[in-house]
Image (tube, rainbow, N blue to C red; front, top):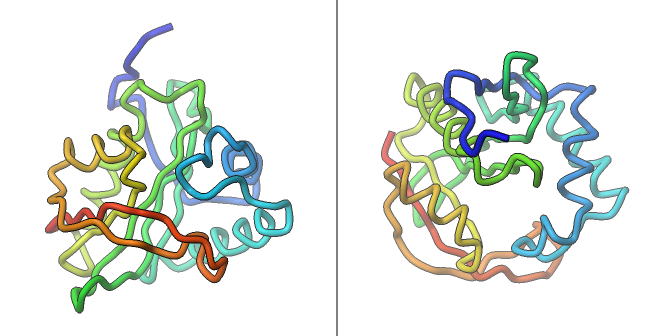
Length: 174
């Protein structure tokens, strides 16, 4: 199997009802959620699915996308953005997931480039990412895409869970 999927074979499309399985496959897997305080429950996954559907209906306040790869446009992950503020700077926050068998092939990087190009056309000036300090691949993607490392911080993740996540704060000026 090819180690890198060419960027022109990667696309993103708004998240839809048929994409729930991708979300479940990633967010319920303990090995995939090791940097995000563990897997999500079936109840939380259903709620997140509904939130992603609602976000995708109005991209002005955020949108989740399904990442597709190859000539068959097979779903391989998710990427998205939502309104955020960090130290008084308004912008978007971003996050991404790629199915395990497609990781390490440049897919997240390509999908993020598509998202950044889209966001540069409208909206706030900044894009933020908050990966765990221990999530070396996600931090490497931020660096490769030109984000600036602002600081380290403690965040609550998932929100309203009481769980803390030691994260890097990355910012990209759009």
